Length: 93
Picture 1 (cartoon, helix red, strand yellow):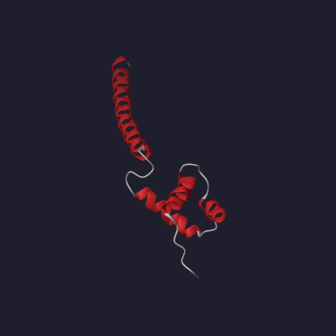
Picture 2 (cartoon, rainbow, N blue to C red):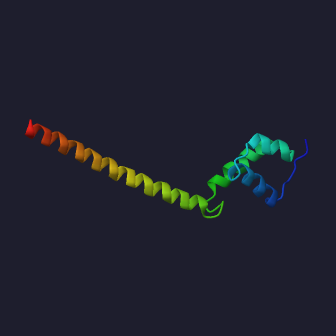
Picture 3 (cartoon, rainbow, N blue to C red):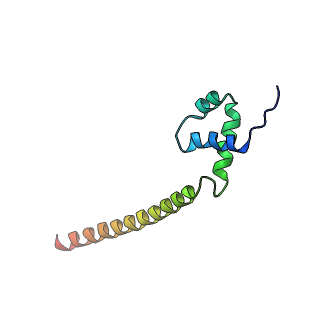
């Protein structure tokens, strides 16, 4: 079987169809007439490279980190309030 070399623009567009538009890897590969294994590799490499996909990945990761920190703080506050409620319930009862 002859090895096909795809241009960078072709690879980028194929990866974009999977990552940004939500199409399945197998469907995109079939439409483009290529191996789905190659497309899986391109998608994995694109996700591993920092800065690929504009700044969206970085901003999403920052948002997730911020939300995780906020959730942790809210859970700690909730636990403190539960303990305080238990303490005051014992005092009044």
